[in-house]
Length: 399
Image (cartoon, rainbow, N blue to C red):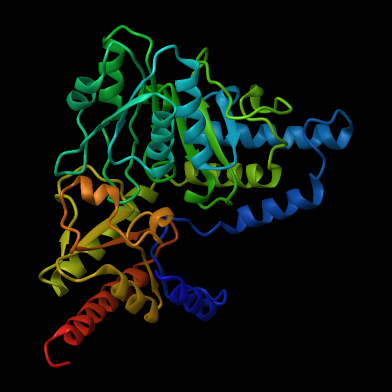
């Protein structure tokens, strides 16, 4: 969205709830119990968790509870969870921290990683590390074979995400982990699970990762809280120094209200066992309606590709995405072109480019959540069809 248009849309929005919010891959709406937990923490747990007096001890206990809740979501032990300021920091700590702890200087990453991983890898490259990017197939997935083929004797770190944040494809991280272990060398395998946790199973016992990142605001928690799971006896170099909080790996007073909200959101996600199936049904309904109304529309990846349940990436050949998004917003529908962190770049995303999708193709990402309703899906499909039809009419010669 161009900046003047963005200001206009923000003014129009003015805090009112949209008719259909389908940009949950960018950020989800906090649950009511999360909002209450954060507010209560601000009122009651204002003391520093590192302080030894009674209010500090109470704050530390609340932090311990949040850590236990987050750990439970990914089937980890609480002492293995390091709180960070978000998913980006968790990914940077897992990747950069492991790279700087290694003796060799070679990294392997997939070409469709989130910018938190790719940009961290590229900054390491500026410092002298060698980085190889593994290109996915046309189905938007890397294979264990292609990742392993990029590994060298001097490789220190491999990073592959679990769920792609733009097209929703599930990467074969467990297969990759097994292949890396079979090499019999000390490699660090980092997994970005930010887009997975909450609607796709994340189990550190079976994923095979050495570190794994998640984020609160992707699963109906507050912004400003993330977590890195780190396998026991794995070493990282901290990104910065300070007071030695979080096992000395993330210094700085913990954002206790956000961590508490994270814990409440994680517990709620863990208790909703039918969410993935319910959300997948809504996503499939949205795609069916859109394809019935727009003959030229198609999926970014084949229908049988393993995908997370909440992301529908829809391509519109020769119809630019930005005017469609503005038209959708006029209908009260909020979606995106792809990753929110790259929305202002006004250029094709690296993910779509890696898939060989022509830059002239409009790409829309509709991302659902546990709060998405059938009414939102029905309204969004109609709004999309009307928006595309209006744009196509305006584009006809003589207009």
